[in-house]
Length: 467
Image (spheres, rainbow, N blue to C red):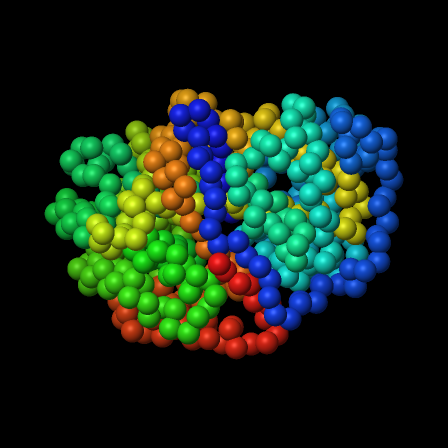
C-alpha cells in the first residue's frame, strides 16, 4: 500500500528482517526530469551538530503527510522545535491521494520538502527514486540528544529503504502484524490465543456457540486476510514459501503450505464463521463490529489498529495481539514467529525548495522526544529504540507488541510484493469473493496466480529479487 524499539526486557533482539529487495530488470523512468542535473539546493545556512544539513535561518518547510491510521499530528509535533532551532515554519498538509496530488508536482519540478509516500495511493518508488535524496547523511547525523541516528535504530530498519544502492526512503514506524482480540472477552470465556489453524477453527465453533462470529471484514481491507494467509503459509513452509511469493514464481500460490492455509480458511467460510456482508461494508465500520460491538472475536491487522479504532473500541476491551497461526504444530517456524516490517516511508525530493529542511524535520522526528511522542500518542512504535516505558503508556496492545518481539527474538520475517507491484485493488476483489463464499480455493488461487504471471512476464515492470 508501514516498526518499534529496544526497551530493556522488551527489546527487539535484532529485527533482522528477511527479504531485502534488490531491483532487477529494466530501470524505471523517473516521473519527471532526468535525475542527472544537480537541482538548486536552495538557501543554505551554517553547518553544525545542531544544524547538520545547513538549514537557512527562517527557511520554511512544506511536508505532505499521508492521513491514515496514524494521522499527521506526529509530524506537526516537531514544528515548535524546528522553529526554535531555525526560525522557519513547518507546514503539514494531510493527504490520502498521494500519487494523484504529488506526481504532477514531481513532473513540474516543485515537490514538497518532505513526503510520507504511504497509503493505497502511494507513488511507486521506482518511478521517483532518481528524484529523491540519499538519506545516508541523515542516518550519520546526530539527533537532538547528541547520538548518531543510525546507532539509535533497531537493526534492519533501513533495509527496505534502499533502491539501486541508495537509501532513498526512511520507513519511520515499526509495524507488528498478527491477530488482534479482546483479552477481556477471551478471559471471560476461557479462550486462549490460537497457535494453529485448528485452534482458530475451534475458536470459531466456540464463538458461534456464544452467538458471535470468528472474523469480520470490510470491502477495502479484504486483503488483510491475504496478509494473514501469507503469514501463516510462511510460518508453515519457511523461507522457500516467502521467496517464491516475493519473486512472483509460477505456481507460487499452489505451494502446499499456501494451499493448506487456504483450505483452513475455506473451512471457516463454509462453517459460517465469517460475519456476512463484509463485501458491502466500509472497512472501519467492519472493524467496529469487532472492536466495539464485539460481534466477531478476531481481526487480522497491523499494529496501527488500536490508534485507528481508538474512538470505536468498547470499554475495557484490552486489545491484545498474537502471531498469525501456522497450519500444524510442526511448522517450519516456531509459534512465536511473526511478520514485522518498517512502514510509513518518508522521502526528501531532490528538487524540493528546502530539502535541508525536509531532512531536518526527519532528524527531529527521530530524536527520543519525537519518537516517544509517536509511541505515546499512536500507541505504536517507531524504528527508534528505548522510547516505550515499562507500562507501555497503559496500552495492552502496545505491551503485547513488545511481548511478541521479546518472544520471537530473531524469528521475524517480512514481505511486500503486494505493495511493490500494486496488487491491493485486485486482491480486494478476489478476497471479497472468497470470504463471501462466491469463490472457492481453486478460483482464489487462479486469480492470484494470474496477476503474478502477468506482472512477471511484463518487461515494462521493474522487478525486485527477494532472497
